[in-house]
Length: 428
Image 1 (cartoon, helix red, strand yellow):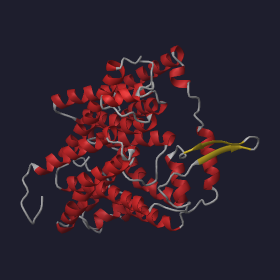
Image 2: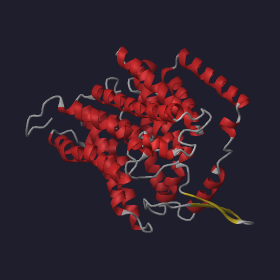
Image 3: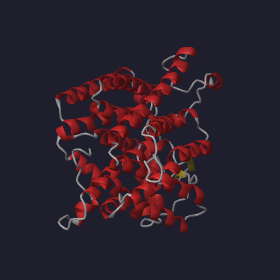
Image 4: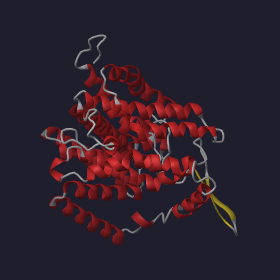
């Protein structure tokens, strides 16, 4: 692993699997923000930035071919940090920490690809999603088994928090829990499709069933939409009869639920979303190009009308794109799209038989769809919404960057191809 001292070959797999399993399930058992961030930095950020990053530089892995595809990410991070200059009372330490953490996972994924450890990366990701399913299964057993709450009760509701905590279950906000579980279920689905080992595939299917049950128990429409988005993504990626059949069954089940138990889907109405989005658009218009500057502090969205005045306050716009446009303006939103949209479009254009990392696309589509309804921060330290965007986006971008470096410095390669390299079959 290093040219300065010999490291046993088992260290990297052990560290990677332990770290991923801990981080993916972390927010289900450790909800203290400070402690969670310290665990993330100890397991991921510090080893990556202090060991792997210098190692990549020493081995010549970071060259022009690597940096050009990485440019949208680097410019986005730089612009976000600079935007604090015109923000009101920004939290500097939290924002710089967030930038370092995003950069760390990008470097980590890139190093694993450069060093030929893509299979290890995929196996670690699968085990990490399974670890989340194990904890999710325990939460379901406690709430609906040991505490014998009726299945009609939304997970974590019912007012028996003290009894849940006695069994080690700390109730999670249902919106945040959905942002954590939905993309991991999507990732696990994609990994199962690519998995050749029958034992791991069977284990993955059991874990996927648990995560889907968990989403149903949360009774969030975002979770229900995520399931449909995952199926549609599989149709686009794999283009076979199986996924068309699954989609048809999903539509039939959804229609049946809507007819038989309409409150399961319609009970929350529109949840103020149109009013929140219109209010946010009005605020964006005050500084449309550069935004108001990132703060990493709660910036409430106020919904009001001319007759009764202020109606309600919300913590954020409940839409990732609007949140970025508010804090970073059109400039920041454009850079954010450049991080993932070109790579996603290239990936979707691949032939079905050459898809080897469809799990990235499925996760990213599900995650972005969820963030369009429940929102996220433009750049925040490790949190629930990371699994919706930063994790899959960095997996996608690292694949592009590594491919760009492997293309070499040949003059016959256009600048566009260097900025958005094609995916190699063996790479993806």
